Every structure is written in structure tokens, then in C-alpha cells.
Amino acid sequence: MLEHPPALEERVELLTEQVQALERRLAALEQPEAGPALRRRRRAAAAPPPTPALLPDARAISTFLGLGGRTLLVMAGAFVLRALTDGHLLPLWLGVTLGLGFAAVWLAAADRAGRLGLATSAAVHGLAGVLIAFPLLVEATVTFHLLPPAGAAAGFAAVSGAALAIAARRRLEPLAWFTVTGGIAGAAVLMAARGDALAPPATYLVLLGGGTLWLGYVLDWRGERWPAALAADLAVTVLALRALGDGDDGAATAVLAVQFLLLAVYLGSIATRTLLLHRGVVPFEVAQAAGALLTSLGGAAFVATRAGGEATGAGAAAGALGLAAYGVAFAFVARRERDRANFPFYSTIALLLVLAGTGLALSGGARALAWGALGLLAAVLARRHGRATLAVHAAVYGVASAIAAGLGPLILDGVLAPGEGGPARPELPALAAIAAMAVIAVLVAGSPGPRSRPRRLTQLALVGAIALGGAALAIGWLAPLLGAPVDPARLAALRTAVLVAAALLLAWLGRSTAWEEAGWLAYGALGGIGLKVLLEDLPRGTAATRMVAVGAYGAALLVVQRLRLRRRDG
Image 1 (cartoon, rainbow, N blue to C red):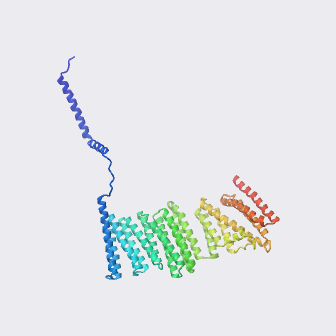
Image 2: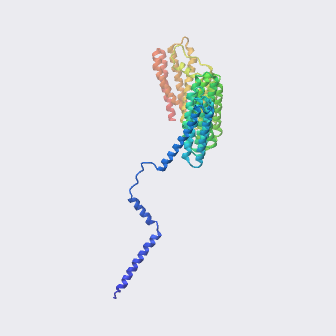
Image 3: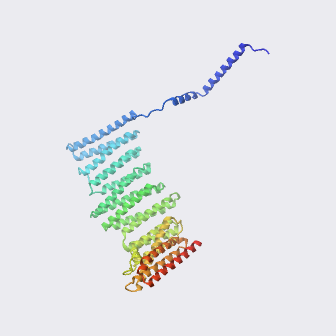
């Protein structure tokens, strides 16, 4: 075989190396970033980790210093006006007016800075305006006596309205916080210094709370509404407590007006949001609705009791709000599938308002009859519409009617009190209350709807009140048949026999699912009767009365056991 010349082999090897070099260059050209990226990763891995800076950026420090210096110069300008006023170089009214105008200038500067996108500068300018305006209004009222408390409250409202409008327009939440905090502090100082005129600053705080509530609705600024609501509730509470020691009927009228303004602002705002915007009730609304109801209606009850003639008007206003809440619950919330979760909220608010309104406007037997009639109406509606919430309301109205009719003292005297003198004879309001509760219990037991825990608990209270009230009525009617004076031993045996009959009736009713709560009460009744036999019948009784009491109780144990076992087997 012939061998290739050496020169030819060297040329082939040289060409092969050149082709490989061209392939490497083409690959590098097709992925131009691979090389630099790889080199950057290698440099980053080899470089030491950056050390945190001990001081902020120099630009941030200079910005902070500039804003702080500008704010101090603004405050210095305000002090110049104060010095000129104290030195009588400016009239008092002119100095206060110039000071408020100076605050307005800086609020306008905050609006302009917000429009230019300078959020930090805008917040600082707004803070300067608030720091000038609120203390100046307090001082003009407390120190200079230039403004009445109503004028200072109006000034607070104007400054707060302007500052919150700028904050909302330019999305400056820090300015909203400054305004709320300054307004609450200024109103608190004003109320502490001028205790003779608390209604104007309290009114301002209620309106401030309503404004922050709507800021939360529109802009999702949810933090400011909590301190504003708390301040409004506390101010109205202080206002009511102060009115208790004041004998001026005009002051009582002003207090009632502020209390119902608190209810109208918060409940009206919540209703507007949930109805027009189709939103569900949030925890803040539940908490503040409860706080406003407790503050307003509780305070109104105290003030109306002291004022006497004002009770009817306050009750009518609360009743009207309650009927409006019922109307909202049925006419709007119940018709919208996604809003039905709000029905318990509105109906509970309505229940409390109606109870408070009728309680303030009526008294004695009229109050008991009104609550009994409301309970019957709610029971009829619950049976017709299948609303478990209305069944609960019917039971609450029925128990409230019994309490107003004096059924509590009647039960204590007839069932639990010692036997000397005999039990009191029942009167017509108590009879009407027990009859109303019995009808309500029948309607509620047969009404459709889920048997929720609140419904079971209210039905339990209703049936228990009927059982105790009925036993007290029976004892009061039968006790005179024992002769006069009443023998304690015979009266004790009579009580035991009546209570045993009530326990048997409860056990018999408990066989039905609709009256299951009555069966539960039968066990409790047996326990109470056993304790009564030990503490009253055995120590006080004779041989004959002890035989009656012990025999009746033993028979009751056997019969109740049979009835409950029969229901379990069924």
C-alpha cells in the first residue's frame, strides 16, 4: 500500500483545526449573551456580600431635614401671629382670623403638592395646617372666649372636612390620620375645658366618625374609623352622664338629639352600603352598630327617665327607626339571594330598637300589652314565611311582655317564696302575658324553618317562663281554698303537686319534635322539685302533707321516665 505524503497529512490536520475554530465562533455568535451572563454570574459569586449601610441614604436625610425645617418655619410664622396678638398689635379677632387663614394656606399647599405627586411634602404641609388650626380653635374658645363652643365645633368640622377632602382627592392617608387624631384630641380638650357645653364637640365627633366610615367604604382606609367611632361613642356617653346631673330640659333635648344623630349616621351609612352597594356586613359595622345602640338607647333611657316628658318622643324616634330596620330587612335584604346573610343583622337591630322605643314610650300594663302584641305578630309572620329569626323575635317579645307584666315577682312569690301569708293573687296583665306567651309558643313550635341554636334557646326560655308562670297562677288561685290563715305545710304540698303537674305536662309535650325543648325542661323541673321537697316539704310538713309531696314526686319520676323512653323508642 502506498503511503500518503507527509505534506498532505499536515494540510488535512490544519484544515480540521480551522473548521473547529469556525464552529466555535459561530456558536458564540448565535448565543451572544451566554458568555457575558456567565461571566457576570461568576463575578457575582466571587464578589463578597454587600454590607448594610449604617446610615440612610444622603438624599433621604436631606429631604427629611428640608421638610422638618420647612414645618418649623411654618410653626414659627404661626407663633409670630400669636406674639403680635398677645402684644395687642393686632386685634384678637384679626389675629385668630389670620391664623386660620395661615392654616388654610398650608392645606392648599398640601393639595398642590399632592397634585404634583409629592406625597411626603403634601402630608407634611397638611400636618402643619392641622397643627395650626385645631389648637387655635381651642384657644379661641377656652382662653380668648372669642368663639362659643358651637362655633369652635363648626370650625373643627370645616377644617376636618377640608383636610379629609384633600386627603381623599390626593390619596394622602397620612393626612387623614393627622386630621382624625387632631380632631379627636381637640374635641377632647374642648369638652374637658367647657363641661357646660358638651353637645357641640360631641356632635362634631359623631360627624367625624361618619366621615371616616365613608373613607373606609370608598378608599378602603379602614384604620381611621375605629378611633373615630370609639371617640364618638365615648363623647355621647359622657354627654348623657353629664345630662343626668343637669336639671335643664333643654339640655336633655340636645342630648337626645345627639344620641339619635349617632344612630342615624352609623345605621344609615351601613344601610346605604349594604343596600345600594350590595355588600355584606363587616365586623366593624356589627361592633359599631352594637356600640351605637348601647350608647344611644341606653343613654336615652337614662335621660328620658330623668326628663320625664321626653320619654315619649325618644321612644317614638327609636320605634320609628326600628320599623325602618324591619322594612329594610324584609323589603330589600330578604329578596336578594346574595344579601340574605344581612337579614339577621337588620332584624336584630330592629328588635332592639323596637323594644327600646316601646319601653321608653309606654309604661306598666301598656308596655306589656304592646310587647305581647308584637310577639304575636312576629310569631304569625314566622309561621307564614318560615323565618327562624322571626320565631326568635316572637319568643323575645313574649318573655319581655311577661317581665313587664310583673310575672317575675309573681313567680318568686308563688313558687319560691316562704309560705307565710300565702301567695299573691294574679292580676290581669300577668294573665294576658301568659296567654300571649302560650299562643306564641304554639305558633313558633309549628313554624317551619331551621331549628338553630338561638331559636332553641329562645323557645326554651319561652316554654320555661310559661311553665313557671302557669304554676304561679295555679298556686295563687288554689291557695285560698286551703283556708285562712294559710297552713305552711299544706301550701308546701300544694306547691309540690302543682309543680309535679307542670313537669308531667312538659314531659308529655316533649314527645313531639316541635316541643323537644319542653322535654328538656322536664328533667330540670324534676331536679328543682326534688330540692324543694328536701328543703321545704320535709322540714315544714306534717305526716299527711309529706305523704302527698313524696308520693307525687315519686310518681312524677316514674311517669316522666316512661314518657321520655317512649319518645326515644318512637
